[in-house]
Length: 166
Image (cartoon, rainbow, N blue to C red; front, side):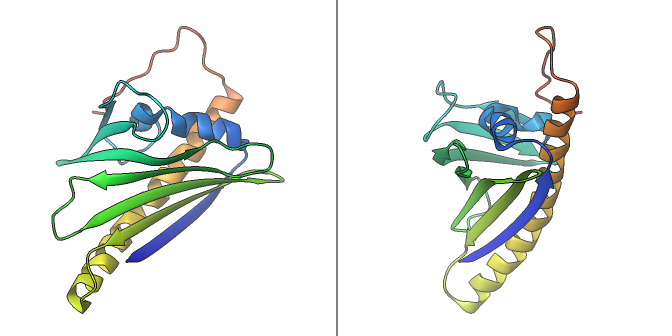
């Protein structure tokens, strides 16, 4: 297995960041590398919630495996399994960790890739890890910008959300 972590700051408090992450079907609103997203389950929060995302020509199903909202000074954690990647990749998990800081929140996204134990499989895991790291940088920046904008300009009741990016 190979894990790759990326971290970025935001001036928003952990609860505001959590609210954006916890709107699990709406990742398209803030992730610039996601073209479409929708929930696949009636359940909208918690372990077992699933969404479908489209990024380019790739469709991935993400299913929540850990759901721990931030509380007091404790970090929040949202983890999910990614299904729909090429079969050469055995499993991929993304885990978001929201750690309170004096100036807001440190957002960490860790991607764990299992392609198998043999050297060629470990090489594949390293390559996939690099691609996921680049995607993580984009998602952290998008999430930070989204929650920072929402702090400066809170949505009104008339605000509508678009779930497909053209």
